[in-house]
Image (tube, rainbow, N blue to C red; front, side, top):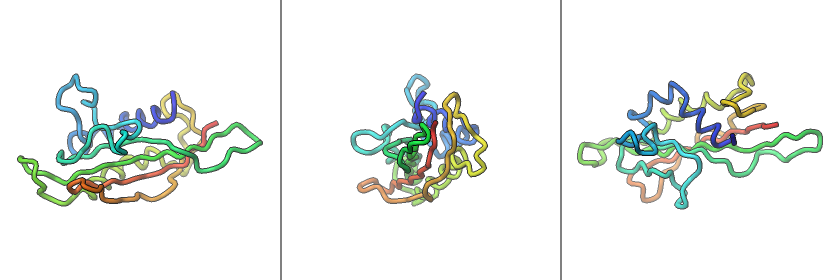
Length: 167
């Protein structure tokens, strides 16, 4: 198991996160569709977006990604220091015709982030395994960073980053 798969399974396996699916986090309509269990993805598409674009859905999509690290390797141990990013793409509420009814995308992103952050930010260093993936520590690297998605019709992107230590 690798970091992204472990992070994905940690999110999708959370009861608090499961409660958001269909309420704040989108899901496919048909049980045989690949993301029926919720719009959570490993990595961004070639367009730097989630594989299911939430625009027009009134929902959010979550992407876990890891590019680069937060510290340099050292000569005293075999630890790795990847930076885990969690992107939350949130759409505004929509009426039955798909028209924007409320500019609440930022609030939606914050609600999803409030559930995801405790899964990864572990200042007491209590969790040392995500499923079967060993973690030495995981701490929030930065506060939730929000920005509008260009040409996103009200979509907002939030980013949380975490400093991971893997031995």
